[in-house]
Image (cartoon, rainbow over all chains, first blue to last red; front, side, top):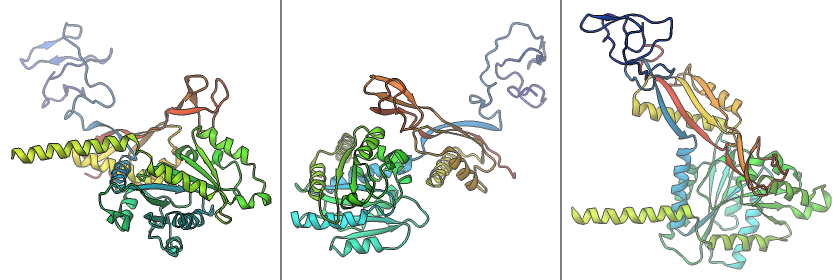
Length: 316
Length: 119
Protein backbone atom coordinates (compact mmCIF):
# COMPACT_ATOMS: atom_id res chain seq x y z
CA UNK A 1 0.00 0.00 0.00
CA UNK A 2 1.14 3.51 -0.68
CA UNK A 3 1.50 4.94 2.82
CA UNK A 4 0.67 8.46 1.73
CA UNK A 5 -2.55 8.11 -0.20
CA UNK A 6 -3.53 4.53 0.66
CA UNK A 7 -4.06 3.86 -3.05
CA UNK A 8 -3.92 0.05 -2.77
CA UNK A 9 -6.69 0.17 -0.24
CA UNK A 10 -10.11 0.32 -1.91
CA UNK A 11 -11.64 1.98 1.14
CA UNK A 12 -9.05 4.74 1.33
CA UNK A 13 -9.44 8.11 -0.35
CA UNK A 14 -7.60 7.98 -3.63
CA UNK A 15 -4.83 10.28 -4.66
CA UNK A 16 -5.92 12.68 -1.97
CA UNK A 17 -2.47 14.15 -1.54
CA UNK A 18 0.28 14.89 -4.00
CA UNK A 19 3.18 12.49 -3.58
CA UNK A 20 6.15 10.96 -5.35
CA UNK A 21 7.14 7.41 -6.08
CA UNK A 22 10.70 6.22 -6.34
CA UNK A 23 11.62 4.86 -9.73
CA UNK A 24 10.58 1.26 -9.99
CA UNK A 25 7.74 1.75 -7.54
CA UNK A 26 5.43 3.53 -9.90
CA UNK A 27 1.92 2.28 -9.98
CA UNK A 28 -1.37 3.27 -11.45
CA UNK A 29 -3.81 5.53 -9.71
CA UNK A 30 -7.47 5.31 -10.43
CA UNK A 31 -8.84 8.78 -9.93
CA UNK A 32 -12.20 9.34 -8.26
CA UNK A 33 -13.91 9.63 -11.64
CA UNK A 34 -12.79 6.12 -12.42
CA UNK A 35 -10.25 7.15 -15.05
CA UNK A 36 -6.71 6.02 -14.59
CA UNK A 37 -3.55 7.80 -15.50
CA UNK A 38 -0.25 6.24 -16.45
CA UNK A 39 3.06 6.97 -14.75
CA UNK A 40 4.94 9.57 -16.69
CA UNK A 41 1.80 11.49 -17.41
CA UNK A 42 2.03 15.06 -16.25
CA UNK A 43 0.72 15.29 -12.73
CA UNK A 44 2.12 17.46 -9.98
CA UNK A 45 4.41 15.72 -7.50
CA UNK A 46 4.83 17.50 -4.21
CA UNK A 47 5.83 15.16 -1.45
CA UNK A 48 5.11 16.24 2.10
CA UNK A 49 5.24 12.93 3.81
CA UNK A 50 7.95 10.60 2.56
CA UNK A 51 10.38 11.15 5.44
CA UNK A 52 10.57 8.79 8.38
CA UNK A 53 8.81 11.21 10.70
CA UNK A 54 5.98 11.97 8.26
CA UNK A 55 5.64 15.24 10.01
CA UNK A 56 3.11 16.90 7.77
CA UNK A 57 0.53 14.19 7.35
CA UNK A 58 -1.08 13.77 10.75
CA UNK A 59 -3.86 11.25 10.81
CA UNK A 60 -2.66 9.26 7.81
CA UNK A 61 0.06 7.49 9.76
CA UNK A 62 -0.20 5.73 13.09
CA UNK A 63 2.92 7.51 14.27
CA UNK A 64 3.70 11.19 14.41
CA UNK A 65 6.53 13.39 15.47
CA UNK A 66 6.38 15.99 18.21
CA UNK A 67 9.03 18.67 18.37
CA UNK A 68 9.67 19.62 21.97
CA UNK A 69 13.05 21.35 22.34
CA UNK A 70 12.39 21.30 26.08
CA UNK A 71 15.21 21.84 28.56
CA UNK A 72 15.51 18.77 30.76
CA UNK A 73 16.15 21.03 33.74
CA UNK A 74 13.45 23.49 32.67
CA UNK A 75 11.03 22.63 35.49
CA UNK A 76 13.77 23.08 38.11
CA UNK A 77 15.00 26.27 36.50
CA UNK A 78 11.51 27.81 36.57
CA UNK A 79 11.27 27.18 40.33
CA UNK A 80 14.83 28.50 40.73
CA UNK A 81 13.89 31.73 38.97
CA UNK A 82 10.86 32.07 41.24
CA UNK A 83 13.13 31.45 44.26
CA UNK A 84 15.52 34.14 43.03
CA UNK A 85 12.73 36.71 42.75
CA UNK A 86 11.33 35.55 46.11
CA UNK A 87 14.72 35.96 47.81
CA UNK A 88 15.29 39.38 46.29
CA UNK A 89 11.87 40.68 47.29
CA UNK A 90 12.55 39.54 50.86
CA UNK A 91 15.96 41.22 50.79
CA UNK A 92 17.69 37.86 51.09
CA UNK A 93 21.04 37.06 49.44
CA UNK A 94 21.39 33.28 49.05
CA UNK A 95 24.65 31.36 48.58
CA UNK A 96 24.86 27.73 47.53
CA UNK A 97 27.83 26.05 49.23
CA UNK A 98 29.08 23.04 47.32
CA UNK A 99 31.96 20.67 47.99
CA UNK A 100 32.91 17.07 48.47
CA UNK A 101 31.93 15.43 51.79
CA UNK A 102 34.26 16.32 54.63
CA UNK A 103 35.68 19.56 53.22
CA UNK A 104 34.41 21.41 56.29
CA UNK A 105 31.33 23.21 54.97
CA UNK A 106 29.47 23.01 58.26
CA UNK A 107 32.51 24.03 60.32
CA UNK A 108 33.01 26.97 57.97
CA UNK A 109 29.35 27.94 58.38
CA UNK A 110 29.52 27.75 62.17
CA UNK A 111 32.64 29.95 62.18
CA UNK A 112 31.05 32.31 59.65
CA UNK A 113 27.86 32.72 61.64
CA UNK A 114 29.79 33.41 64.86
CA UNK A 115 32.02 35.97 63.11
CA UNK A 116 29.03 37.65 61.43
CA UNK A 117 27.33 37.88 64.83
CA UNK A 118 30.39 39.60 66.27
CA UNK A 119 30.45 42.05 63.39
CA UNK A 120 26.71 42.77 63.26
CA UNK A 121 24.51 41.07 65.87
CA UNK A 122 21.36 42.36 64.11
CA UNK A 123 22.14 40.82 60.71
CA UNK A 124 19.38 38.30 59.89
CA UNK A 125 20.74 34.99 58.64
CA UNK A 126 19.64 31.42 58.22
CA UNK A 127 20.83 28.09 56.87
CA UNK A 128 19.30 25.35 54.74
CA UNK A 129 21.20 22.10 55.28
CA UNK A 130 21.12 19.37 52.68
CA UNK A 131 22.16 15.82 53.52
CA UNK A 132 20.97 12.39 52.51
CA UNK A 133 20.24 11.45 56.12
CA UNK A 134 20.30 12.82 59.70
CA UNK A 135 19.85 16.32 61.08
CA UNK A 136 23.36 16.48 62.58
CA UNK A 137 24.41 19.50 60.50
CA UNK A 138 21.25 21.53 61.21
CA UNK A 139 21.75 20.72 64.92
CA UNK A 140 25.29 22.14 64.76
CA UNK A 141 24.00 25.32 63.10
CA UNK A 142 21.13 25.71 65.60
CA UNK A 143 23.67 25.44 68.42
CA UNK A 144 25.02 28.83 67.24
CA UNK A 145 21.54 30.30 67.65
CA UNK A 146 20.92 30.69 63.93
CA UNK A 147 17.76 29.19 62.46
CA UNK A 148 18.33 26.16 60.25
CA UNK A 149 16.16 23.78 58.26
CA UNK A 150 17.45 20.31 57.51
CA UNK A 151 16.49 18.84 54.14
CA UNK A 152 17.06 15.11 53.85
CA UNK A 153 17.25 14.06 50.23
CA UNK A 154 16.93 10.34 50.94
CA UNK A 155 18.59 8.70 47.96
CA UNK A 156 19.05 12.05 46.21
CA UNK A 157 22.54 13.33 45.55
CA UNK A 158 21.75 17.05 45.37
CA UNK A 159 19.29 19.73 46.44
CA UNK A 160 16.86 21.01 43.83
CA UNK A 161 14.95 24.25 43.58
CA UNK A 162 11.58 22.93 44.88
CA UNK A 163 13.33 21.56 48.02
CA UNK A 164 14.86 24.98 48.66
CA UNK A 165 11.51 26.71 48.06
CA UNK A 166 9.86 24.43 50.64
CA UNK A 167 12.70 24.90 53.14
CA UNK A 168 12.70 28.70 52.75
CA UNK A 169 9.00 28.77 53.66
CA UNK A 170 9.95 27.29 57.05
CA UNK A 171 12.53 29.94 57.87
CA UNK A 172 11.96 33.15 59.82
CA UNK A 173 13.70 35.08 57.01
CA UNK A 174 10.47 34.52 55.15
CA UNK A 175 8.69 36.55 57.81
CA UNK A 176 10.82 39.61 57.06
CA UNK A 177 8.06 40.80 54.82
CA UNK A 178 8.49 42.35 51.43
CA UNK A 179 10.76 45.10 52.65
CA UNK A 180 13.91 46.16 50.88
CA UNK A 181 16.00 46.50 54.00
CA UNK A 182 19.24 48.44 53.63
CA UNK A 183 21.19 45.61 55.25
CA UNK A 184 20.44 42.36 53.48
CA UNK A 185 19.70 39.04 55.10
CA UNK A 186 22.01 36.12 54.36
CA UNK A 187 20.82 32.64 53.48
CA UNK A 188 23.38 29.87 53.28
CA UNK A 189 22.37 26.71 51.47
CA UNK A 190 24.72 23.86 52.32
CA UNK A 191 24.31 21.41 49.48
CA UNK A 192 24.77 17.65 49.72
CA UNK A 193 28.49 16.83 49.87
CA UNK A 194 29.09 15.96 46.23
CA UNK A 195 31.32 17.63 43.66
CA UNK A 196 29.38 16.34 40.66
CA UNK A 197 25.59 16.55 40.73
CA UNK A 198 24.85 19.88 42.48
CA UNK A 199 26.67 21.70 39.65
CA UNK A 200 23.65 21.28 37.37
CA UNK A 201 20.88 22.40 39.68
CA UNK A 202 20.14 26.08 40.00
CA UNK A 203 18.51 26.74 43.37
CA UNK A 204 17.92 30.46 42.90
CA UNK A 205 21.16 31.39 44.65
CA UNK A 206 23.22 34.49 43.91
CA UNK A 207 26.33 32.40 43.58
CA UNK A 208 27.65 28.91 44.02
CA UNK A 209 30.63 28.84 46.35
CA UNK A 210 32.91 25.82 45.92
CA UNK A 211 34.69 24.82 49.12
CA UNK A 212 37.90 22.87 48.71
CA UNK A 213 40.03 21.82 51.68
CA UNK A 214 43.78 21.63 51.34
CA UNK A 215 43.73 18.00 52.47
CA UNK A 216 41.95 17.01 49.26
CA UNK A 217 44.63 17.55 46.65
CA UNK A 218 45.18 20.45 44.30
CA UNK A 219 43.87 18.74 41.18
CA UNK A 220 40.21 18.61 42.28
CA UNK A 221 39.24 21.50 39.96
CA UNK A 222 40.44 19.43 36.99
CA UNK A 223 38.85 16.22 38.25
CA UNK A 224 35.47 17.88 38.80
CA UNK A 225 35.51 20.71 36.27
CA UNK A 226 31.74 21.21 36.01
CA UNK A 227 31.48 22.27 39.63
CA UNK A 228 34.37 24.71 39.51
CA UNK A 229 33.01 26.09 36.23
CA UNK A 230 29.63 26.69 37.88
CA UNK A 231 31.06 28.39 41.00
CA UNK A 232 31.76 32.12 41.24
CA UNK A 233 34.04 31.76 44.25
CA UNK A 234 36.39 29.01 45.40
CA UNK A 235 37.21 28.96 49.12
CA UNK A 236 40.30 26.96 50.04
CA UNK A 237 39.78 25.82 53.62
CA UNK A 238 41.78 24.15 56.40
CA UNK A 239 44.78 26.31 55.52
CA UNK A 240 46.07 25.73 59.07
CA UNK A 241 46.97 22.23 57.85
CA UNK A 242 49.14 23.46 54.97
CA UNK A 243 52.43 22.70 56.78
CA UNK A 244 51.41 19.03 57.08
CA UNK A 245 50.14 18.29 53.59
CA UNK A 246 51.55 18.37 50.07
CA UNK A 247 49.24 20.93 48.60
CA UNK A 248 50.44 23.20 45.82
CA UNK A 249 48.32 26.30 46.30
CA UNK A 250 49.43 28.11 43.14
CA UNK A 251 48.80 25.05 41.03
CA UNK A 252 45.34 24.54 42.55
CA UNK A 253 44.35 28.12 41.75
CA UNK A 254 45.76 27.81 38.23
CA UNK A 255 43.71 24.61 37.70
CA UNK A 256 40.53 26.32 38.91
CA UNK A 257 41.18 29.23 36.54
CA UNK A 258 41.65 26.80 33.68
CA UNK A 259 38.06 25.59 33.97
CA UNK A 260 36.72 28.99 35.02
CA UNK A 261 38.88 32.00 34.09
CA UNK A 262 36.65 34.33 36.12
CA UNK A 263 36.63 32.38 39.41
CA UNK A 264 37.48 34.31 42.57
CA UNK A 265 39.58 32.64 45.28
CA UNK A 266 39.78 33.05 49.05
CA UNK A 267 41.94 31.17 51.56
CA UNK A 268 40.82 30.56 55.10
CA UNK A 269 40.99 28.44 58.18
CA UNK A 270 37.75 28.08 60.12
CA UNK A 271 39.82 26.74 63.00
CA UNK A 272 42.22 29.65 63.45
CA UNK A 273 39.99 32.30 61.91
CA UNK A 274 42.69 33.30 59.43
CA UNK A 275 41.08 34.68 56.27
CA UNK A 276 37.62 34.72 57.82
CA UNK A 277 37.28 38.51 57.69
CA UNK A 278 37.99 38.57 53.95
CA UNK A 279 35.27 35.96 53.46
CA UNK A 280 32.79 38.07 55.44
CA UNK A 281 33.79 41.13 53.40
CA UNK A 282 33.16 39.19 50.19
CA UNK A 283 29.76 38.00 51.40
CA UNK A 284 28.53 41.37 52.63
CA UNK A 285 29.80 43.26 49.57
CA UNK A 286 28.17 40.75 47.25
CA UNK A 287 24.92 40.70 49.22
CA UNK A 288 24.70 44.49 48.93
CA UNK A 289 25.48 44.52 45.22
CA UNK A 290 22.79 45.01 42.65
CA UNK A 291 20.82 41.88 41.81
CA UNK A 292 21.64 40.41 38.43
CA UNK A 293 19.94 41.59 35.28
CA UNK A 294 17.65 38.59 35.06
CA UNK A 295 16.14 39.38 38.44
CA UNK A 296 15.76 43.02 37.50
CA UNK A 297 14.02 41.96 34.28
CA UNK A 298 11.68 39.62 36.16
CA UNK A 299 10.84 42.33 38.66
CA UNK A 300 10.08 44.72 35.81
CA UNK A 301 7.82 42.05 34.35
CA UNK A 302 6.00 41.65 37.69
CA UNK A 303 5.51 45.42 37.88
CA UNK A 304 4.21 45.47 34.31
CA UNK A 305 1.76 42.62 34.96
CA UNK A 306 0.57 44.25 38.18
CA UNK A 307 -0.05 47.49 36.28
CA UNK A 308 -2.03 45.61 33.64
CA UNK A 309 -4.02 43.79 36.31
CA UNK A 310 -4.83 47.10 38.01
CA UNK A 311 -5.94 48.52 34.65
CA UNK A 312 -8.06 45.46 33.98
CA UNK A 313 -9.66 45.63 37.41
CA UNK A 314 -10.31 49.34 36.92
CA UNK A 315 -12.03 48.68 33.59
CA UNK A 316 -14.13 45.80 34.96
CA UNK B 1 24.24 9.67 39.81
CA UNK B 2 22.22 12.76 38.92
CA UNK B 3 21.38 11.09 35.60
CA UNK B 4 18.52 9.28 37.39
CA UNK B 5 17.00 12.64 38.39
CA UNK B 6 17.48 13.86 34.83
CA UNK B 7 15.79 10.73 33.48
CA UNK B 8 12.86 11.44 35.82
CA UNK B 9 12.73 14.99 34.44
CA UNK B 10 12.72 13.66 30.88
CA UNK B 11 9.86 11.27 31.65
CA UNK B 12 7.93 14.16 33.19
CA UNK B 13 8.40 16.23 30.02
CA UNK B 14 7.14 13.28 27.94
CA UNK B 15 4.14 12.74 30.22
CA UNK B 16 3.29 16.45 30.05
CA UNK B 17 3.49 16.29 26.26
CA UNK B 18 1.16 13.24 26.31
CA UNK B 19 -1.33 15.13 28.45
CA UNK B 20 -1.34 17.93 25.86
CA UNK B 21 -1.21 15.87 22.68
CA UNK B 22 -2.84 12.63 23.75
CA UNK B 23 -0.57 9.83 22.61
CA UNK B 24 -0.26 6.33 24.04
CA UNK B 25 3.41 5.50 23.59
CA UNK B 26 6.72 6.80 22.34
CA UNK B 27 8.69 4.77 19.82
CA UNK B 28 11.63 7.16 19.56
CA UNK B 29 12.98 9.71 21.98
CA UNK B 30 15.54 12.16 20.64
CA UNK B 31 17.65 13.93 23.26
CA UNK B 32 20.48 16.38 23.04
CA UNK B 33 23.28 16.26 25.62
CA UNK B 34 26.20 18.52 24.80
CA UNK B 35 29.79 17.60 25.56
CA UNK B 36 29.89 20.34 28.24
CA UNK B 37 26.44 19.66 29.74
CA UNK B 38 27.83 17.73 32.70
CA UNK B 39 26.02 14.54 31.76
CA UNK B 40 27.42 11.07 31.30
CA UNK B 41 25.52 9.84 28.26
CA UNK B 42 25.82 6.12 29.03
CA UNK B 43 24.58 6.71 32.59
CA UNK B 44 21.65 8.75 31.26
CA UNK B 45 20.76 5.97 28.82
CA UNK B 46 20.98 3.38 31.61
CA UNK B 47 18.75 5.50 33.86
CA UNK B 48 16.14 5.96 31.12
CA UNK B 49 16.10 2.25 30.37
CA UNK B 50 15.74 1.45 34.06
CA UNK B 51 12.89 3.91 34.38
CA UNK B 52 10.93 3.16 31.21
CA UNK B 53 9.08 -0.14 31.92
CA UNK B 54 5.39 0.56 32.48
CA UNK B 55 5.70 4.14 31.20
CA UNK B 56 5.11 5.86 27.86
CA UNK B 57 8.79 5.31 27.15
CA UNK B 58 8.60 1.52 27.33
CA UNK B 59 10.27 0.05 24.21
CA UNK B 60 11.24 3.49 22.95
CA UNK B 61 14.45 3.80 20.98
CA UNK B 62 16.59 6.41 22.72
CA UNK B 63 18.71 8.58 20.51
CA UNK B 64 21.14 10.94 22.22
CA UNK B 65 22.76 13.59 20.05
CA UNK B 66 26.00 14.96 21.49
CA UNK B 67 26.85 18.41 20.15
CA UNK B 68 30.55 19.18 20.43
CA UNK B 69 31.81 21.69 22.95
CA UNK B 70 32.41 25.21 21.63
CA UNK B 71 34.10 28.03 23.46
CA UNK B 72 35.17 31.60 22.90
CA UNK B 73 38.91 32.03 23.39
CA UNK B 74 39.66 35.44 24.83
CA UNK B 75 43.29 35.26 23.72
CA UNK B 76 42.56 34.26 20.11
CA UNK B 77 39.27 36.22 19.90
CA UNK B 78 37.57 33.38 18.09
CA UNK B 79 35.29 30.40 18.62
CA UNK B 80 37.09 27.08 19.00
CA UNK B 81 36.09 23.44 19.53
CA UNK B 82 36.86 21.76 22.84
CA UNK B 83 36.12 18.25 24.06
CA UNK B 84 35.75 19.06 27.75
CA UNK B 85 35.96 21.91 30.21
CA UNK B 86 39.56 21.03 31.01
CA UNK B 87 40.77 21.26 27.41
CA UNK B 88 43.02 24.15 26.38
CA UNK B 89 42.36 26.26 23.30
CA UNK B 90 43.45 24.16 20.28
CA UNK B 91 44.95 27.29 18.68
CA UNK B 92 46.91 29.04 21.44
CA UNK B 93 47.04 26.41 24.19
CA UNK B 94 45.56 28.87 26.71
CA UNK B 95 42.66 28.38 29.07
CA UNK B 96 40.90 31.72 28.73
CA UNK B 97 37.81 29.97 27.41
CA UNK B 98 34.12 30.69 27.87
CA UNK B 99 31.84 27.87 26.71
CA UNK B 100 29.42 28.99 23.99
CA UNK B 101 28.02 25.66 22.80
CA UNK B 102 27.69 22.04 23.80
CA UNK B 103 26.04 22.90 27.12
CA UNK B 104 22.55 21.91 25.89
CA UNK B 105 20.52 19.30 27.72
CA UNK B 106 17.19 19.02 25.96
CA UNK B 107 14.40 16.76 24.83
CA UNK B 108 14.34 17.52 21.12
CA UNK B 109 11.73 15.30 19.55
CA UNK B 110 9.40 12.37 20.08
CA UNK B 111 7.95 9.91 17.58
CA UNK B 112 4.65 8.95 19.16
CA UNK B 113 1.78 6.55 18.54
CA UNK B 114 -1.86 6.92 19.40
CA UNK B 115 -2.15 3.19 20.04
CA UNK B 116 -0.31 1.59 22.94
CA UNK B 117 1.81 -1.57 22.80
CA UNK B 118 -0.81 -3.80 24.40
CA UNK B 119 -3.89 -2.50 22.59
